[in-house]
Image (tube, rainbow over all chains, first blue to last red; front, side, top):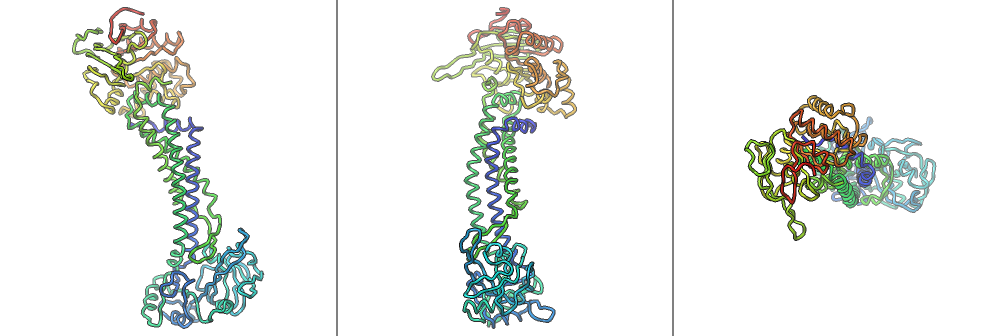
Length: 390
Length: 238
């Protein structure tokens, strides 16, 4: 039988002051790790949730973002008639030809200019993007210089509250509505009428960046996609909207993740040494106790296990504390430049149960490596001499 | 009967033959024990005396399987222990040896009950049986009202009695006591010795004890002296 866990837990408690250093070290690493991962997760989820499973986005063949894509009005008509496209009650295809312009607005938090995405949409935009709701004011009217601001854009930039009249692209606009898309990327955008936006930026009126269509069902996507590729008049590609946005989140969320792992790894090495130090001092302070247990007949393996367990208990306490410290980050909104769209994206940290579990696993991992050598040392103490140590 | 001439009968509980223990101190070899022989019959109470550095504790460590000899053999109850390795030796100690140390060596984070229970965790006994054994052992040493006390809440004499309860609880083949009264005042030392004497006389326990204290030694049936690594018989107290 092994050395009772009670001994381990009570020993941790009895030496709480010196264990606290190791606990705090591990807690710090876990908190940073979980927070960074929550940031990456939040960034990714914000973009992925922008896509609806019912929607497909059509861009020029080979384009990786709407920014570098061109779809003509003529192509839009053909796309609207393709198989799998849903129609409204009055028989109109649910299609939104959209134009994307990136322009600089005054960013309140940094008190400098930041790039924002202005999306020109069709009057059916809300029916296609069914996750977007007007929470204040109304939707824009076609042909007018009216804007609907995403709730995060409205908070992020100066002059985008309801009723404000911001000036950009050489004309003055009126904010007539605030929209909420439930935390997706649209919340960071400002929407205008596609035709007016094209005119303002002196673009041809019959050109879109992309066309988003509502499908009759998620399963209708393959029929829709094959219809487009079979048509010789089209040189476009169709993606599920979700996949498109997931790809958009790739670069930045991967960067945050890599950075998170790197920071956690470097801090983790420090924490492992902290645990190592704590456990070594625990072993040397308790060598007489260890020798007594060995003299009573507990095997060397039991001693290794008892001290590893002790290190794990300490690291678990650190992990729990770190997770607790990371929890307040959940839901905290911040914004960062999305390199793929060259525009600012507001997103919320997402501390998920899965991430917390990873944080705890990371803590135990550190505890294991910090405790291993001291535990082996404990098991190898010469019993006869250690028994008489004071 | 205790013999130190290596000619004891083959049925003796403890048989030590030509035992050598040498330590390397720098470039120097220190011979702590030289060709030591010892036979102890079951139920005997033997005290080892001798000046500091005479090898008393070394001998006790070797008898208890805490250290290995340089040469020679130790056989206890028919098992030769000098060839056993770490985990096997640990299992042997758990089964056959009850230790009583000068500094009691109780685990400070465990109660008297839990300290005494430790050796039983290495047996097949279930929880209820363990509880019964611990209660009997603590009752035997007169501490049945101190089950839930921590070592820091006990006096030195009480701590040593708990450690004696721990030593006897699993009913080992013999008890090895290393200066059991060395850290106690005269009154507590008297109580501890009376307890050991009772374990020997009443329960037939085999006890091997190292001591500096002539008062303690005179309670033993046989007193052996270690001089320059060899055992000398029957000179009474020192």
